[in-house]
Structures are given as C-alpha cells and as structure tokens.
Image (cartoon, rainbow, N blue to C red; front, side, top):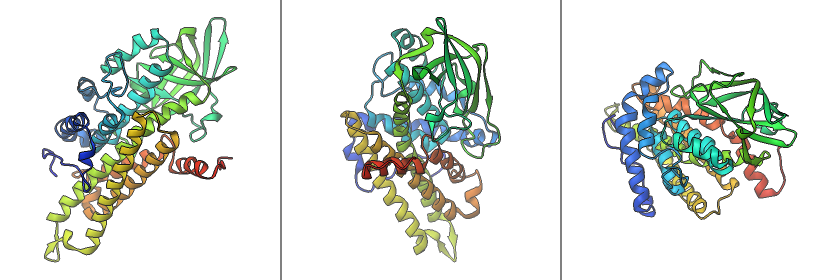
Length: 391
C-alpha cells in the first residue's frame, strides 16, 4: 500500500459485522487521519528522533484523548471504539499510540477516577483538548516489573508534601505540563500531580533509542519537591491505584499491537505480489504464502479476543487477567508479524522507505513496557493455577 492509498484493514471472518455503526465510524475516521496526516511524515520523525507534536491538537479535535471517559468534554465512547482508536493510531506508529495511551489511560484516567473535583476541573478539559500534556511516573531506574519496590518517597511536612526520588522511561516526560507521580508514604503508595516548573522537579530525555524514536521518553528527578496537600490524588491509596491505571493502558496497547500487525501484513502482502524472483511474484511461493497465512490468521484471532475483552469491559466485567492475556497475545502476534514481514521484504525490510523496519523496532519496546511478556504470562498463570510465581 502506498502512503496515499486507502487502507482496508484485515477482515477474514467479517469482524466488521460485529461492530456498531458508531464503532465503524470512529475507526474509519482515525484510519483516514493516519493515512492522510501521520504516514506522510512519520518516517522523518522516526529517523530524526522527534515527536510529531503538531499532531496532538488534531487528534484532540477528533476526540481521541480520553475518548472513553465521561464528562469534562470527553467523547464518552465505549471501550471497543477506544480500542479501535488505538489500533488505527498504532498502524501509523507505536510512539504516537503511546502518546494517546499515556494521555488517556495513565494521566486522564487517574485524575478522573481518583482526583478531586478541583483537579478534574482544572486538568481534564485541558488534557482532552491537547492544551496540556501529561505523563505517568511509576517506573524507576531500579524498579520496572516490580513497582512495589519503588524508592520514591513523599513525606508530610505540616500541610505540605516533600517528594524525593527518580522515575525512568517515562513517555512524554520532558514535554508534560503535569506528571502523575507515584510515591511511597507512611500511608502507603499515593499519587501526586507535579506541575512543570515546580522547584526541584527536572527531566532529562533518554537518548540513543532504537525503538519508539518518534516518541519522547524521559527520566524524572524529584529533589525536595514541595507540593501542597491539594496536589495529592485523594482517591488513590495503595499500589492498587497505579496498577488499575496500567490495566487501562494495557487494554489500549492490546488493540494497538494489532494495528501494527495489520500494517506490516498489508505491506508484506503488497510487496510479495509485485516483487519478482525466479520469473514470478514471490507471493506465488509456498513459503511466503505460509507466512502470510499465519499472519492473517493470528491477526484475526487477536481481533476477536480484543473485541470480546472490549465488550466485557463495556459491561463492567473485564478483569486485569483478561487484559493481560490480550496484551501478551497482541505483542507476540505483532512481533512475529513484523519478523515475517521483514524477512519477506529482504534488504528492503531494514530501509525506512518501507514501514516494516520501523514497526519491527517499535514492537520490541511495546513488548517490554506496561508489563513484559514474562509478567503477563505469570499473571495469567496465577489465575489458572491459583499459585503466584512472582516470589
């Protein structure tokens, strides 16, 4: 598929018929946006290691930010529609989908779910409109898969809080107007809203990334950061609160990975039909057809899994275990699809004249963040056996 060509998706079992009219409309709107606005410039941003900040307001204008939240100007869409937004955005680039996920699920969601009315009124309309950008500070330099080991601390001093610590691998960190920072207190883990420019709060970008190059990834440093009591999220107490945010984000990622898989499948299929070797298109060879068939089948199965989890989520029945299964599955499928597509494109698969190499690199970060494949495997395993294997 060329950059300006319409994308028709992958639908071998008429999943289209399982979507509502609104869900199809949302998907098609974002699909058109990705084809027309994202794809023409995303390779340049990936090559130069820059984030396409100019796309934030247009995405906000289309209702993509906080799309499944109610009130405060948010679109109030169902979770399947929100998943489809992530699917189509990641077809464009994982870094851009990461922005949408963080803004929506890791910043707006905790403020919406755990914030005071003052915090909601101040931040949610601005974040929804793209007038403010947020980040989520949970991961630390020495604590990734085990957030319970966090060392960032917040100590009460009169009617103020003093925060000290560091966070790492934070999407949007250096461009964020507000950071949702999680810290250990004498009352357990609590969340705080730390605004850009607060004395003692500094950021530094991670440089030299091979993956998510069209995304801002930063370190956060907090040195005697003094905050008023009103900066704490009053409804978030204990580690369960940040983990609930991760469940929201992992759900969107599960859909996003299938957008990535569809992008590389579509490119590999088009390439195989036109690339001639030994006097005929490589699509006519059995080994290439096997790869294409595997990709199409796994994409189809993943679409159905995501759709069912989305329907359960809309009904208030989805569990974090189901979301872990969807995220784990989606990342595995996307990673293998990217590998097969890279093989089929040969040397062209490592050239940014094609999309596959970029997606091939991006999927490694997506596989790792918001719970590695190992962690999600153990979450599902504990659900099956009743025996935790984390310790």
